[in-house]
Image (cartoon, rainbow, N blue to C red):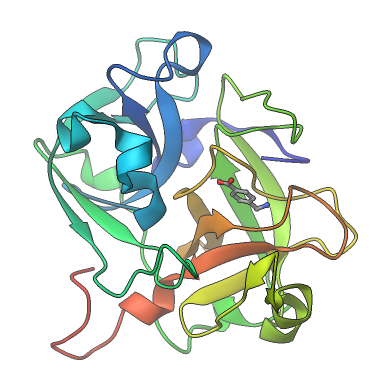
Length: 241
Ligand code: 4AZ
């Protein structure tokens, strides 16, 4: 997180770390992505966090979720094994469209950790809404990972702001159907590497997951998030959120 401040997970218990048991050890305690608790045994994260390149040969068996812990190297909270993963079949690793996966945990987290989802039409998606992004990722854009959970204030931005920044050039393509634009057009507040999959929250509800962007915290290069409302529908065919 760029331009953030340390926050206590006690105030944001839906914020969890995805950690590898065998990789990225040392100061990061294996942390490589974030996630959000949406039910006692369900964590949403970015689909790109579960790619083979990220998970390594052991796949899901290498994965654990760390909850209730601000300082990753402290002993607090819960470390939970992942029993099953669901990757959005509409996810494209080429465009990053539909960048969402659901982890089913082997044991339940407290109900008090669960954050509600902002569904389609929720006012929290209106451009200009104050939002906050959470994570243990890079705080500088130069590979300095946070030891403790941080949060930065960002604004929900219009689709147009990201369409202008990412028109399908080498920086990427913004596809508003499953993506959400948020950040600080003047720069200075953003998600960054290692924050992927982590929560974007507005009006006390989950609106996005950190997905991608050009660099971190740069002016005119907003963050691109997975649009949670694209996966919350009253229809029987909706994703299992
Ligand atoms: C990443 O590499 C990444 N500034 C995530 C978010 C952003 C940039 C990069 C947004 O995981």
